[in-house]
Image 1 (cartoon, helix red, strand yellow):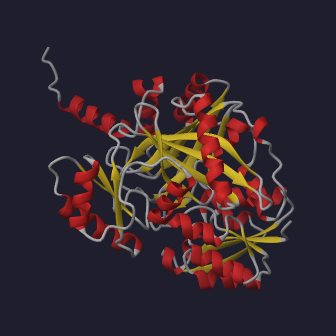
Image 2: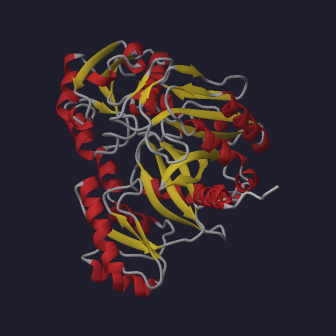
Length: 458
């Protein structure tokens, strides 16, 4: 086992890693910007090092400063968390070359899966189901238009080097593919430094299903079921749940077998998530792979009764997989709500000082957060304040518990999306488990329509 781990991240995920390390008897080193000097992850770690001013590029993305911090504190491993440098193959390579252990997949795995075109080519060779689309990076808008004609509309243009909805555009029959290609490529270049694009057939009523996998360095690999991530706004997840209401035990077994066969073919190691798009007929297609711990990993932890971050660290330390696929079965149903510092009506960011804070509790309720009364939500980083995870022995129990917990949650001084989360969980489609990635848009559209209706005179 490692002696000391540098956590190259901030916020609730840094706290999450600190707790797992402490249970394993591993010392931790937190890094922080000057803006995060009073944060909980700084206070809870065994040591802390300031790596720069508030902007991410000068602190949490400053590889030279991060590695200097690891060196002066005598770390033998680095945990990247999620976001920031977690899927940066160059960072993983530097960590490896300096003789430290990168707690995650090998750098070549990050490089393969980090480029969407390369990942799609791998998926095709490995037998993963794919939507019809371009077989490589598009040369220009003219080529995109030709492929769109061949495979049929609607199509979706995607950034080869990115994610999170940036550089992503949908074109339907009669749309201007060439102009949309240029817009998407420009957006991707600004966001990722790479304007490369590809395209594939667009599914009109898709569900976003992701499969959690874990592998050791001795050839053993398992999957830990799926998570439903279809509640999204602008391709950013808001609510996740597991098991998915749309996935049967038979389909889960099939998806797992296909995914594990593909991962075995490249000797994948550590944790990762394979993301699928599922159409209205239950057919699933490979989208991409995230080579890191996911924001929504607690959902899987509560369903299967295990600590994924602890497992991740143990696997990186060279231990053998302690799990056997045949014994991995869902024990509960879990729902996660992402509490963000944003206006619940406009979704504009709402940084600032939290003047009052009370988080929900009780059986079946978990809150992963770095927030507390007088904590200042910084304007420089992601707006995530907390993750509320509720579970029960059925979906109905988990849902009623999540609704109750949201009613108990109090965050004063800033605006949060808690009122909107209540709307999602109260929606008839979500309650029935019959929803797809259009749900948030449908809720917002219906809300606007209701607000525009004239009030009847009395």
